[in-house]
Length: 538
Image (cartoon, rainbow, N blue to C red; front, side):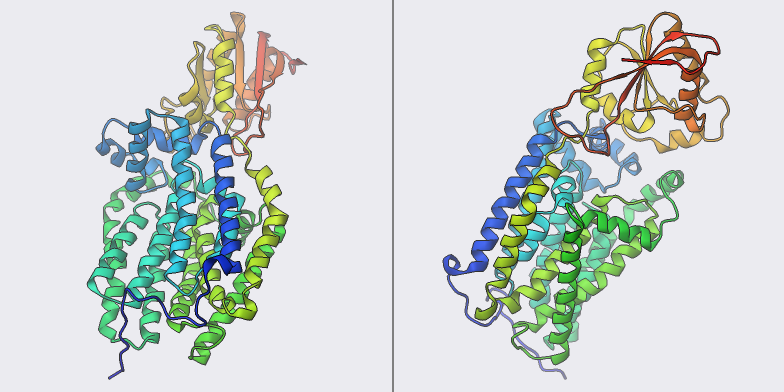
């Protein structure tokens, strides 16, 4: 029989050398400075982000359907499990549908993540989470998309809590710690689907920690139970995924690992590609440190707590392929926000595997120097990157609402309609390209029904012609070409043939606008039969 090692779950994790007072610890001072900067940057984003862009507006519209049953029955039209929708529903009920309330909700997620990182560090050999606070706290993708009114920031927070509870459960497997880990795992997977695959990686890490501590194999049951319960909690979503499958080809493509790695580079490598090199360099170092610690199989200068090393290293080794495997199976053309969870795994792993080694007296200055240099170089570029509005469609909707009359006709791409429907209160009629009857949230199924149909745009052309003939204007949100390809191209070709003039209206905005939703305005007026390209003016 294997010898067992008893653990007091309330006792601090053993580490060498003894901890110095916080006020004298350079790592504490560096962490405090980095943490304050991180919280300030999050506030800057929240107070400048402005109105909700289409993905955020989509979540709000869907989560505030008349009943929770309605939300469940339409859950496939958003990207998140039901818990996130219920959270947004609560914010709506408490705030009266205030944009700024949703901004504060996003701010809370990324701010609490910074705080939880510190709590985890105090319960592990990390002590002070210098690297994770810098890497996540000063990353524009995390600030921007983690702080948006979407589930990504709360998913990061849920993962950090899950990491913490799984480690406590691995350190001392018992019913109470298993219950806490189970609750964290269920909440985590019910916030963000991606976390289900990270749960599996944490199970692997927990099993490795128990084996390194030479605990009885029966204790592994406590490690597996939380993941099993989390998996069971996802079974009801089978019906959601079946409904999604009916139109999912509208949003999927044959993505490759190379594509995903490039998108991961884009998410991490802001505001400079140097940042990506820093992340990869640190990841390489911690892998070497972790492997050496496990191979030597003794407590030494590189790692004072071998079980925590095993937990963190195995979790990292499993999490990365699990995550990319999930994205390959998903087949979405991913964007930076898809990688926030993976960035959290990497940042936590750097702290978990490197900080214990750097807590020795002669190495204590390394982490603080890294933090201060990183902040000195990148805070200003990060600040300029996050000081943006999420959309300008609220300004466009307000502008059209003031200037347009019932004689005019407004057209926009179908994907911009979700935001426009939230903010437009004017008298001019409006429609989308292609014309669909619903605009509160994305209805890919309605768009799919129009694929391959002839004369899909004829009703739109009739409205355009009527507006131009009666002396009104056709106002197009977003550029249209005259190549005749797809619905916007067909509209552009029609207006180029029949409108007498085309102008471009300026949308005044004091801040830069996110490239994900920053359409322009084109205005067509006058009527001609089979005219040439319209004259440009304004």
